Amino acid sequence: MCEGMTKTLDRSDILEWAEHEHAHMDRLFQDLRETFARIAASDVSDAQAREAVDQAVDDLRGALDDMLEHFNEEEEVYFVAIEGRFPELGPQVARLVHTHESICRKVKRMTHQLAKPLPQVREEVKGLSTQLDELVVTLEDHNEEEQVIFATALKRLSSDERVELLDKKMAL
Image: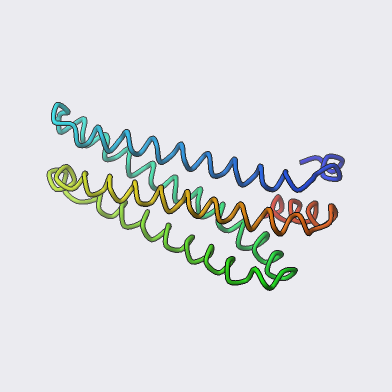
């Protein structure tokens, strides 16, 4: 971001960043749903199913990398600032951090499950799809809670403080 641009930021810039990141995650998980459907399809050859499993593993690893980067930005910049300025939001921030950890564990577990032999993966893909659906619900609930906390805190931060937050995020 250009130095001259940062001085025109308002509280919506941080909310827009979070919404953009969350929309990206939604697209990744929608792609995974489609990949799981290909794995489960009875008219798909083993070679095509193996390719779909490999794609699912790549997508999960990519999603985990993206989430870790996103969660790190939140935890190292935004959450620290929010807790520092508004200690009363500490319990909600702690819950968000706990959810970050839970989401990452679930993605790692799903990736591990896809490493099983193909016949077993094909048998278990319905369960994996259910886990993915539950993960998506967790993410959606988490995103809503996060947006409320961000909005609450950002309404109370000065323009200079918001600029400083975005500058710290950009420096990570």
